[in-house]
Amino acid sequence: QVQLVESGGGLVQAGGSLTLSCAASGRTFSSYNLGWFRQAPGKEREFVAIINWSAISTYYADSVKGRFTISRDNAKNTVYLQMNSLKPEDTAVYYCAATTVNYKISYTANEYDYWGQGTQVTVSS
Image 1: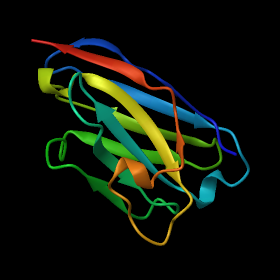
Image 2 (image 1 turned 60 degrees about the vertical axis):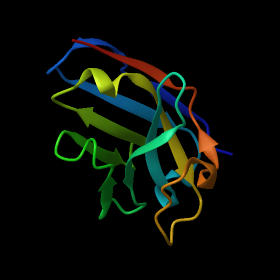
Image 3 (image 1 turned 30 degrees about the vertical axis):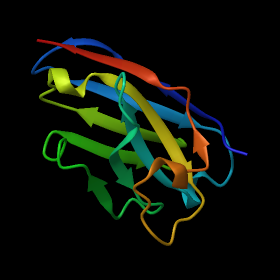
Image 4 (image 1 turned 90 degrees about the vertical axis):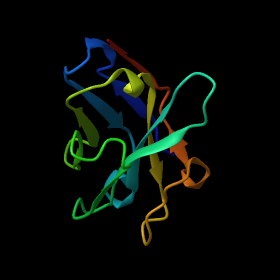
């Protein structure tokens, strides 16, 4: 069993930056692919960024490419999402997620086994 706890959300002006963190429990953290998803009011949960278990590969949604960076520190059981040049349309609840299926990249929420409680990010114009 893996427990994920996000932190770092908040209110920021457009053009600003935030860094989200997600701390995980569990001894097998380093074997999981990890993802950040977000959900805005009235919308479905969408993929934002993914990092594979070895941190060799990262993947981003087109809407955040060049602005967001996902990273992980397996020694600290933590995954990060650095968000720069934030836009009002980035406003959402951000979730980290983990999947035990690490031989492929999973882009949809229903492919992930463990979820954090979410952290609110609000970008004002």
